[in-house]
Length: 87
Image 1 (tube, rainbow, N blue to C red):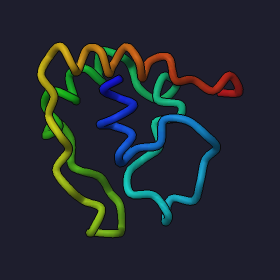
Image 2: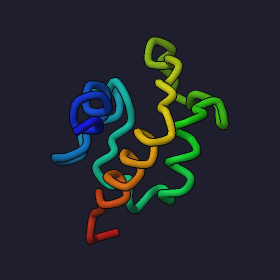
Image 3: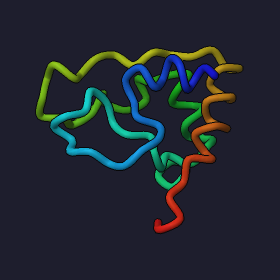
Image 4: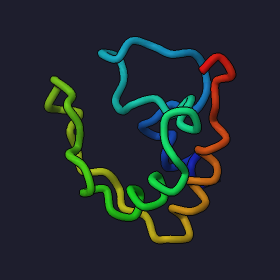
């Protein structure tokens, strides 16, 4: 529920890909293909592990919300299920 309410406010977690220039944050439609669950859980607790991103649009570079361990684990578990079978 947390992912569907809080994360989906900025990230798309379902649907078809759309052009990057129209997004406010990266798609998480296939996060399970792209990220390891363990990495996601660690990053969600400490989003300063990596730079905010290499997006050319500075208005989209905002500090990511840091989650407590229980929410980070729940989000990581859910996002690990978001997979595209073509990948």
